[in-house]
Structure formats: structure tokens, C-alpha cells
Image (cartoon, rainbow, N blue to C red):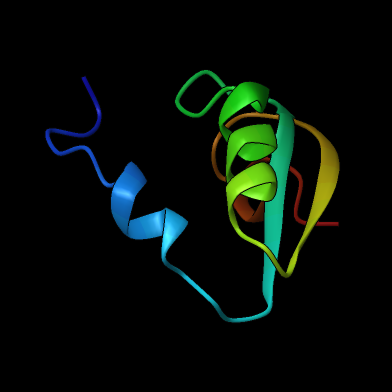
Length: 62
């Protein structure tokens, strides 16, 4: 279990421009989470990173 709290209500109230970076194959945070965040944050952009893992800056830094 990664998170012990449910912050969905907090995220729904977020009103700043947001860039969501999502790894395409992340075992910790699946793609559905990025899709959900993009759906509930009004002024958001979702960018998929073609990468395996939760830390793309470490697993594929190039």
C-alpha cells in the first residue's frame, strides 16, 4: 500500500494549471490514476512518458 489517505476530494478542488506526467508502465501509480487526475483537475494536461517504472528520471534519464 503506497498511500494511507484518500485525497480525491482535495484534488477535485484544485484550480491551478497542472501538468501530469505519467509513466506508461508504472507499478506504483497505474495509468488509470493519471487519467483520473486529468479528468478531475479542470486545467490539466496529461503527458504519457514511454517508460517502465515510477521514477523515469532514474530508470531512463536520457
